[in-house]
Amino acid sequence: MTLQEVNFDGLVGPTHHFGGLGVGNLASQSHGGQVARPRAAALQGIGKMRLVASLGAFQYVLPPQQRPDLSFLQQLGFEGSPQQVLSAAAADSPAMLSAAYSASAMWTANAATVTAASDSHDGRVHLSVANLTSSIHRSLEPSQTLQLLRRVFPHPDIVVHPPLPPTWGLRDEGAANHMRLWSRGAEQGIELFVYGGKHHDPNAADGRFPARQSFPASRALVRRHTSRNALLLQQHPMAIAAGAFHNDVVATSCRNVLLLHEYSFADPDAIDRVSEHYRQVCGAALHVDRVRNAELSLEDTIATYLFNSQLIVDNRDPDGPMTIVCPQQVAESAAARKVVERWLEDDGPVNKVVYVELRESMNNGGGPACLRLRVPMDESQRQSLPSGLQFDDALAERLERVIERTYPEQLGLDDLASADVLQQVTQAQQAVWDVLGA
Image 1 (cartoon, one colour):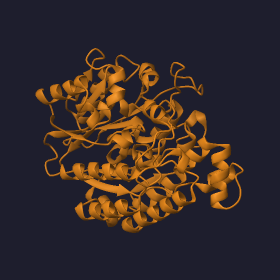
Image 2 (cartoon, helix red, strand yellow):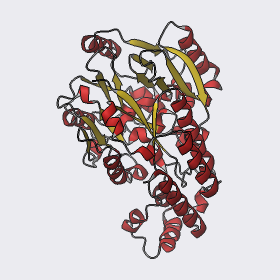
Image 3 (cartoon, rainbow, N blue to C red):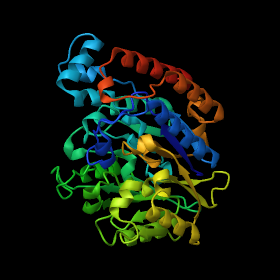
Image 4 (cartoon, rainbow, N blue to C red):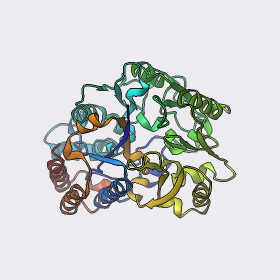
């Protein structure tokens, strides 16, 4: 079975704003209340997709979710017309209004956890929609995500599971806490399921921030996906306390490469375990680069999102070298840039870096890897995907024209109760859905 890694990026929605809603997310909290630029955010996301596609990766785009979520506000007791609901929420509970408007579904790394067919005992691709119960605004996403993914993946050998029960003890944040490592010459790969806390205690890290992925949830996904070669690893409490609210803030991987910060995993022997497991399953050596805290501090790691970079394999040369797509903030940090330069100078699989401007997403806590969900599939499965979602220059240009014409240029918290804003974002969403056939 020849598998191809397919990227599904979420298009930034017209309600993108800085609500400061992210739990343990320093960028989100520090930019809360500032004026956002939805139009620029969406165009930056398309620019990243265009770049990834040009590097030879399979690239698809997913539409934004319906926002604001008026049914959510109505469940909270706000009644009347849509405008009355928004005005009442703005006066009585602006944080809930912000949650109802959140465009956070653009970070599709949190949409689901994915197991490749070759890595499951039943030979099917498994996607489990994340319940995202750690945050109110993100907990609004799973129902629409489930409907969307079941439309996107109609192939009989791809199963899209509903979220785990929405309880704190089973909190699940999707592929941001999951990695797959494989070798082109091996039939199977290995999976790393990374969790933050083993218990129901919200202070399972060290008390500063809650651990947003629970051990029971990760363990349930291993069972549900019939995973053959899974390892469960605990994220380092120091990383969570420093603001690494997902594993993909301190580690990134692709094929036979694992790049990570020294304080990624709690178990000091975790890397040895992963390397040995990879050798046994894949019959090859894993390329690991563990960046010491003395080389790049946790603070700088989180500020630059170095490990939220994307490692890209050119499908025209699947055994060839990789390109790393880093946020512009990495280039602006002497320490982070030096790490990347060392990777390029080493005789390893990564031989090129490209920097991408994603400042609007970054200011809300989402880098390049946050914006994409990776799904390994064979060619017949890929051919079953809706053709209207496959990213190319023609689709990019149509989306860009719609975004330039319909998206708000700026959006602040004070704008969310506006009737004009409600009308504008509703029309913008419909225009985007029309382009994508959603």
